[in-house]
Amino acid sequence: MGDVLTLIDKAQETMDAEKAAESAKRMLEAKFTLEDFLVQMREMKKLGPLQDLLAMLPGSQAARTR
Image 1 (tube, rainbow, N blue to C red):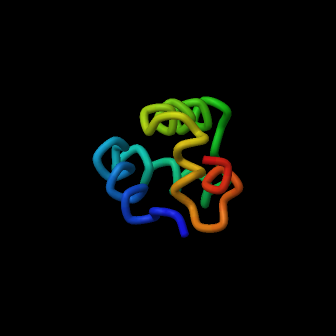
Image 2: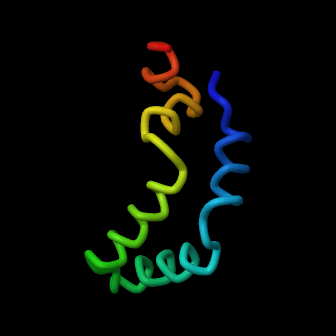
């Protein structure tokens, strides 16, 4: 089933809300750059391995392989 609530909690603890809001605004204005993408990837990296994040999503193949 996944563990979406844990994923949300982890994201709220780790990620900077102001950076996320600024990135969203830049995307909506079609001003999102590769530098913005790099900042987002660095924020995602703070959450841990991608496989662990995917395992928290419902219906994920990563959750079934564990």
